[in-house]
Image 1 (cartoon, one colour):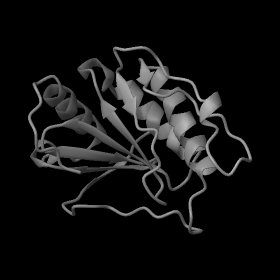
Image 2: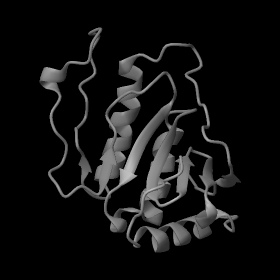
Image 3: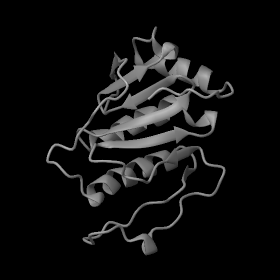
Image 4: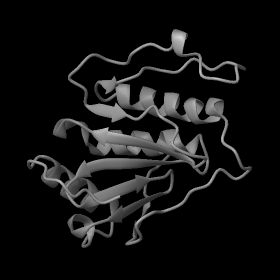
Length: 169
C-alpha cells in the first residue's frame, strides 16, 4: 500500500473518534493495540506492556499479560483503554524512533483497522494523530507542513531537542 496521506491541520483541544457501535469492548481495543505494538517493535523497543492476550473473558486476563520490551523503550504504547474512542496513544521516548519508515508502517497497520487512529506525543506544544489515510497535526512545529515528507522532517528535527512542558493534544 502506497502511503501518501493528506495532511490536516487542526486547532481544537480534542478530536473525538467514537467507536461507531457504542461501547468499545476491551477485546477490540487490545486487538488494535497489539497490532500497533507489533508495528512499533519492528522499529525499536516497545512497552511497557506486551501484547494483551485476547479472550472471551469479561475482564482483561491480567495474569496472562506479560511486560513488553525492557528499557530503554523507543515507544511507550499506552495500554489503558481510556474511553470508547478508536485511539491508541504512543509517546516517542527516544528521538531515533520517529522515522519515515515507522510512520509509514504505522499507517499501513491502521489501514487493517478502519477508523482507528494513533495519538503521537513527542514534541513540545505539538501533537499528531495518525490514521491510515491522513495525518492530523497541530502546533507551530507543523504549521508550514503540507506534505508527509515535511511532517517527518520537522518532527525529526524537533524531537531531538530537549523537551519542555506544555505538550498540546
